[in-house]
Length: 121
Image 1 (spheres, helix red, strand yellow):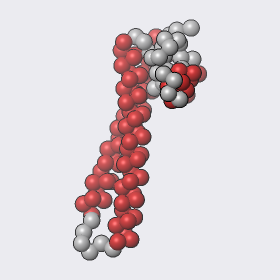
Image 2 (cartoon, rainbow, N blue to C red; image 1 turned 180 degrees about the horizontal axis):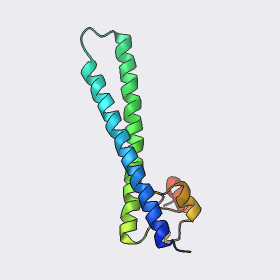
Image 3 (cartoon, one colour; image 1 turned 180 degrees about the vertical axis):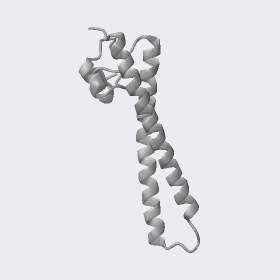
């Protein structure tokens, strides 16, 4: 059964809130990496520098993961504007509402996503 207009509006608001939260997380991570780079000096101990590098790596990995989710959120918002939200990008089948409740930025059914991840699509 297709999503109701009120359900789509609910998901849009949820996606926009998620987008805002992730954008802020990425911004903070970038600022922390920049601060770690700026704090390096000639007098810093190698162990401290190693700890800072580890922290920088963790922040960059978090940023990459968050950026990936941000792209998926943007795609879901685009689908709302196109009027295709809730329809799988691959199979054209309806994405179950339970899946959208769990992952509002899902643009594929579970079956299609599994096939894509295994390289069958």
